[in-house]
Length: 530
Image 1 (cartoon, rainbow, N blue to C red):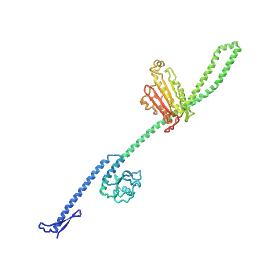
Image 2: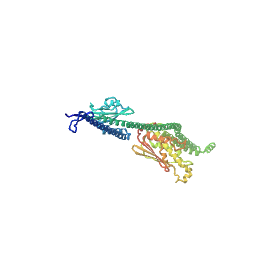
Image 3: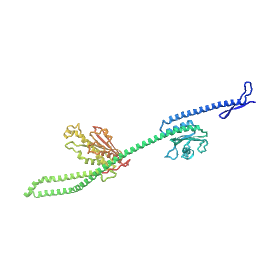
Image 4: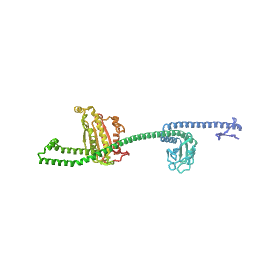
């Protein structure tokens, strides 16, 4: 009878022991059992060694994977790029047909999908905290494998692991497969490694994103404060200029009114006065014809008053008075045209009339005196259509530009102070001149050019020329508001442009472009009335 003993490996029969002695005698059962036990022990040791080797290999693979993931995902702070890298790397080591990286976002009720691949099953029913498999996994904070998923989304097997930072769940990585496969605890370990590293990297990316948003918000706030400060300065400049021009407008209106009434009275009486004087002179001549030999007392009076001179000069005197009245009436009209107190709204305006009125008001600064030969004005007017604008404000701009041109020319005159010196050195000190040119650029725009042959404006000054409160004039002579207000009137109020072209030593030119028809301004700017 043959004695057989089983050989066990990992608690399962892997073979049998059948032994005979050298003389072909059967060994005892005890001897056979001992041999079987020894072989079982050796086999189990080999199985344990192999299992340990496999565990060590898995550990090494996990460590290598950990280092590889850590190196890759920590090189980026872009949240979208980072999460896409995580999901792609996860896909390489764990079989899946769909996957996504989800984020718990307090601002969004459903879980936020940061990155995904495969057909998105979450579009129809977005995952929410505490709802469904994914919502429960994220809420519980524990990874889970579900190899039998009943779903109408085409999902047969699912594995999901939450991402944690300091025991706080910030999201999850979820993978699924269709058709069904069996996910193992080894897959769960690998996904947990991905999740742990991804959580740290995503937290850093979120902090970086928040810091960028905070920096951008701070930058926007700084820009808003800068804009508010600029608007405040402009408003202050407008208020100052409005008050100034309002006072000037009231003064002009008062002066024009006070002058206009007596001048109208004088002008209205001058015509009959001339007629009366002519009648008296005719009567006097008739007396002289009828009584050629007057009494001695009358002859003495004729001689005393120089009657012949009186009768010849009286009509001339009345005529010169009429010229003076006409001149004053023109000045009053120019003051009204300049201030345009009767035209506070948009109106059709003759720009040449505004230029001539402004020049008439500035005439006292253009005339020759003991210090200079005066300033020459050269007009080169083209035919212009009536322009729809705020006449008083446009006249204010013309006044500012012409006054600045006169100031610049007066400064350039100072080296050739005396009139005699200017005449002797006409080549080195040319006659101060202002050119005023107008033209219609096209059917929609007109151009006004005001140019002088003064000393010019340096480039660094031109950059600040239209800034509020910037001035190169001495304290007390300039406020730095004229050009700033002029720019706002032309650009903001009328939709035109105001540009400066200048070179040191060659004079300065300001170019005004105005639309023939009013254009609604891009931003509402308080209107400045005079």
